[in-house]
Image 1 (tube, rainbow, N blue to C red):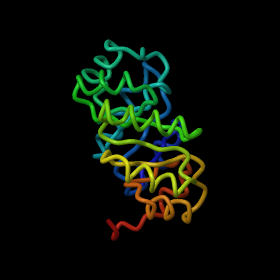
Image 2 (cartoon, helix red, strand yellow):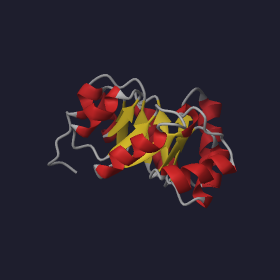
Image 3 (tube, rainbow, N blue to C red):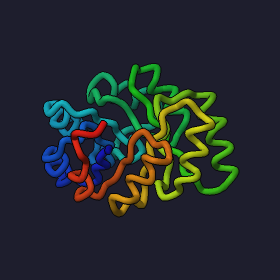
Image 4 (tube, rainbow, N blue to C red):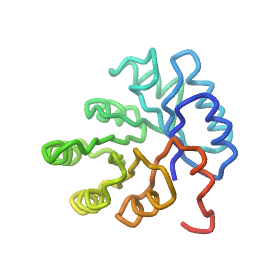
Length: 181
């Protein structure tokens, strides 16, 4: 399970769970370091969805700033050009791919093979047969998220081959059984 933190109030809810990783989709240039530091003080892995952080430019200098000053574990992005720049800054990279149509899947897989992100987040998560197909076509670990509303959605995504499921629904963050790996 990966917590998608979409508002500052979700930070405390997340810290009350055993979940180790968070996608941070809130904040701006003036508060993001504080959020990342708080989560890292609690030994959590923090991935910034760079397009959701106001005031950060989507270029080499923006990524240098994040890597040297904010120091997240890595980034989540829909922009393949940012994956390459983030890798140069030794950040863990997660490419987000929206399964809009057949062409998006085909082109997305080509891009994944070229840029080799550390993981791929496939959205929406409610397409188990597509998750299975994508996990068979790439060796990049697949995370999935989007439209998750209950435990069954999570279980289906994991059974379809996803390594992890991300969700912003905080009541589902507490559902994980820490005895299962």
